Image (cartoon, rainbow, N blue to C red; front, side, top):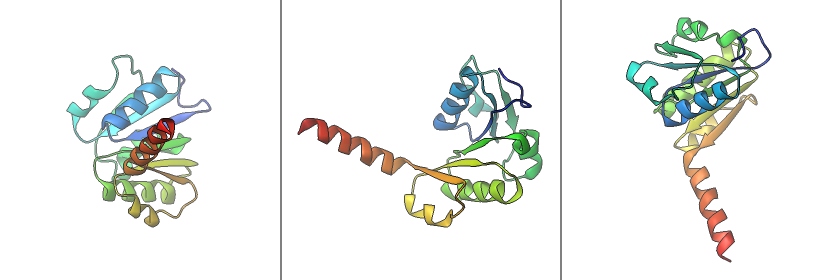
Amino acid sequence: MKRKTEKKMIVVIGASRLGAQIASMSSEDGIYTAIVDNDASSFNKVSGNYSGDKILGDAQETSVLEKAHIREAKEAVVATGDDDTNIFIACLITTLYSVPNVIVRLRDERKAALLSDPRIQVISTSMLSLNAYKAIKATEE
């Protein structure tokens, strides 16, 4: 695994299934990765091969983000189980830190209107599902 002083570093907020899979994949790809969650049992979702940091704490607190090395991050993925929390953390990260790429998972894509910073990209589970449905239907025609 690369050290955080090297080119690429990712901080994943939320050890949800998505967050844990992204952290595991990034770590396995040799990217320095830190994952943050306020529930220690959530880290059980991370791959056994994960070699990054696991930070226990509330990512709405700057001290927790800084413990995860957010200042050095080139990317942050915000994937807690709550859209409003994800929006708040994404805004916090883009306001206080120079993370060039912030990816936010939202269940309600209408809330994406609250995120106007060009560094923030939104993953909407309902839009991804709709696109998958359209792809399936296109192969049937």
